[in-house]
Length: 454
Image (cartoon, helix red, strand yellow):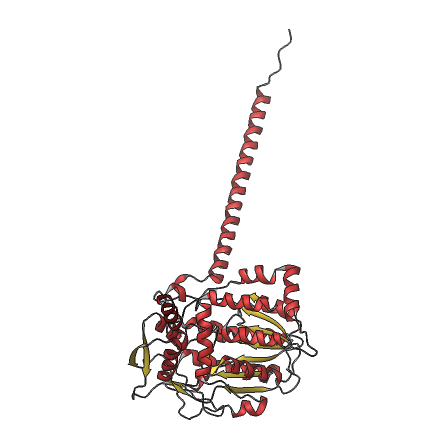
C-alpha cells in the first residue's frame, strides 16, 4: 500500500505565505494611513494660513470699537470668486455700464461709487453720456443700507457697481483687462477725522495701500487712464494762512486721516514722475447735501434735533467759534467733472514713462466759512425744532478750528464757481432727509393736528 504524500511542508509554506501577505497588507494600510494623515494635515495648514491672511481675527480691531463700526473685510476669495469670476454675464454688465453713449465720451472707473460724492458723480457722468463703472466694498463704517440705497438709485440709471476692495489686485487687473478705461475717478477712502483714533489701520489699508494698489494696476494698463482723486482740505492741518491756498504748507497734519491724504499727494507725485500717470488731486472742503454721510455734523445734528437729543457744539481753546467752509454736493460734482474734462492723457505705456505728464492739485470749497452755531440755527428753522445745545471746548481729536478755501486756481483752470449758499443747501438736504427716513416735520404735524381738531 503506497505511503500518503507528506503535506505538512506544503501547509507550512501556505501558512507562511498568508502571514507574509497579511504583514505586507498591514504595512501598506499603515503607510497609506500615514500618507493620508500627512496630506490632510498639510491641507489643513494651508487652509489655516489662507484664512488667517484673508480673514484677520476680530482682535485686529480694537475691542472698544462698537460692532457696527468695525469695518467689513473683503477677502481675495470673496471678490475674486463672486466678482471677477462672474463669467460672461458679469463681463457683459461691466462692459455695458462702462460704454459711453456720447461721441468721444469717457469710460470712467469710479471707486467709492456707493459713497456720497461717488454716487453723485457717477450719476452726473452717466446722465451726460459717459460710461461709468463703479467699485465699492460696502464697508460698515456707517450704515451700509444707505450705500445699498445709493446703489439701487445708480442701478436705475444703468450704472453697475462691482463689489470689491481696492486691495484686491486680481480684481482690479480683471476690470482693466475687460475695459480700456480712459479715466479713473478715485473717491474710495476711509473717511472721518475722529474715527482714526479708534481704528488707525483702516486708514492705512484704504487711503495708502489701496491707492498704491490702484496706481500699480493703472500704470501697467494700456492705455494708461487719467486719474482724478480725492485728497482733502484736512491736509492744511495747522496752517494759519487764510484762506487756504494750494501754495500753502501742508506738512503739519492734525490727524492721521490728514496724514494719509498728504501721503497720497506725495505718492501721486511719485507715480507721475516715474510712470507718466496723469494725476489730479482734489481737496474737498466739508461736502454736504442729500444722500450725505451720517458721520458728518450736519447729518447727525439733524437726527439728534428731531429726536430731542442734545448736540455738542465746539468752541476753540481761546473760546472762538469753530467754522467750516461747507460746500454743497452739486458744486463739488461740477468741480470733479471739470477736473476730468481738463485732465490730460497719461504719457506712459506698459509701465514705462514716455514723457512728462500732468500733475495738479485743487481746492474745491465754497469760499465762505460759516460758524457751526449758524449751521445749527439754520437747521432749527428748517426743522421747526429748537436744538438742545451743549457748548464745549474742542477736544484734541484731530479736528481743526476753521477751514476756508481759496478756489482761484480751480476757477482759472476749469471754471469752478460754487453757487449754493448754506441755507439753500441745507434746505435741500432736510427735504431729502425727511423723505428718505419717512419723518413728518413738526410743522406738518401741527397743521394736521389743527385740521383734525377743527
